Length: 492
Image 1 (cartoon, helix red, strand yellow):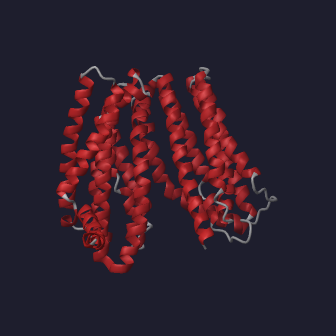
Image 2 (tube, rainbow, N blue to C red):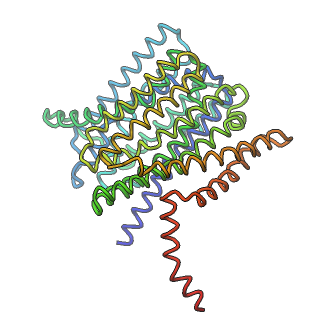
Image 3 (cartoon, one colour):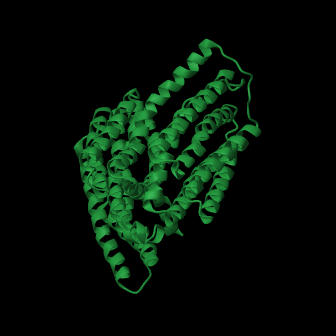
């Protein structure tokens, strides 16, 4: 039993490490790219990259999940492999047609070359999804990080090599191609699966129906994550896409690091609370979960906005200073979206999972409509539209939390006010520290190094003084648990 537990812990650790490394590797390449490319070149590549990513995700949707849920004693049906290959080939063909259309309107340029070069990625992605799903089905998840970490590393090295030798956006394309080529080869050769060609109509229909339902559920995610970049490109141009994408990528990295732990925490505490203590207990735990989310997210994103100037100068360079205001607005917009990961377990507990795609689609539409309404004026207006959309979305999320979680205004208002006051005071101190350093003869990196720890100390002290309920309960539990030890210590 201990050996099995240790194995699960090792696999979980490696899976988490592989995801973190993937984020770090992509961020390193992003920083290298913006240092060497103009905003327009980076914006053009971003649109091509997003197109490939959408086709990649569409081509791979469903195959991993279907393989993973198959009977462990058998291989998945052979039709699954060939359905995945067919979906990948279809997506690759659509990308090649898109590259041909692009060449008609823009000429044969580097973006057309990259799009054609990356057209094979959806095929690689679909085949990889099948192989990884089979590894999961057979209890061999350890193979996933052991193939993805080297693949991300090889891709990063290829991308940096290409940027060093002046290949520009083609280097970024080579990075993606090298990553996917390595992972599809390694997952196939290391215990991979190449079944004989079979075509049983009922089996194919079952597989395609399953994949189609998942694809429909993910369409709203595609709109939410990538629709804004396309719309900025259509309304404003490539330079503005580059500025918008660069600022959004930094804010998005912080958001991704906070959202995943919040999602895991929500799943681990909300369903047990609902089973043990019913609706009233769920309401209390839900209020605490939302307060903790705000307690962590608000200072992080406000701090990122405060340090936007030094960060852009240090990471991107002077040519990208226009993205500073974009980073400020997009960072603040992420505060209102931090509650979205909590929604899924709440709906799931109440048997209302079918509402989730509609809710996510509504969130995406709000963001895109706001962008179309006021974002056409400038890239700053586009970023401001996302801040406005996040306020609307955060307000709208009240209704599902109230209906399915029993949340009432008195459950969260006082905690939210205390956290907001603490963050406001912290922000004033952080701005004073930042400006004091920048006004002197000290280097800009010193403000990035000194301001966060000072702000964190101030914020923690303010939270201890103001005592929001989740923190108050935590401190009370720690005090209660330490009393026996203190009594024994006094008796010595």
